[in-house]
Amino acid sequence: MEISFRALITLIHGMFFGAFFLMAVYGLVIELYRSKYAEHPSQPSAKAQSLERFYLTCTVVLGWAAVLTGAYLIYPWYRAVPPAGVTDLAPFPRYLLKSSPTTSGWHDLGMEWKEHVAWIAPIAMTMVAWVLTKYRATMREYPQVRTSVLAFALAALVAAGVAGFFGAMLNKYAPVNGGATIHLIGKAHE
Image (tube, rainbow, N blue to C red; front, side, top):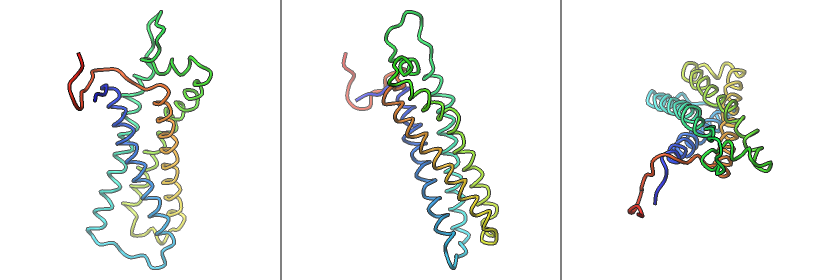
């Protein structure tokens, strides 16, 4: 069992940073929605507030890790230019997708989303985390702020969810491979 270095980084980017970010934001959205309609909200203990800050911080870190690894590690591999005369475009995912009218849309729409719109997710979550950390005690008094925080959390969830979908589809049609081969189990065949 083996995997290339680039495929491993792509796996960490999507299945670790991205998937855990999505799960954490989803949990936060559900909790924000639930607390919006709570008749008698309880005041969390100091320990619960500390755990909430930790949760929010981890969520923000996961979001930024997903976007930054995608933008600065995976995207340069994705857009590598094939040398003149190369006919096998498998090591050059962008050119492989654009070489066929049936897959060019994955680049035109999917990669554009991932390049630009996916940045909304960690930006919005950073704002959500900051507001919740700073103003959690007074949020009940300002329903417009609470609703805005929920809307930003939903925007982060949608942006990350669509980016994750496109990432999975792009990796299906034009995976980023290359680099050293890492042997996970067993010996390399010679």
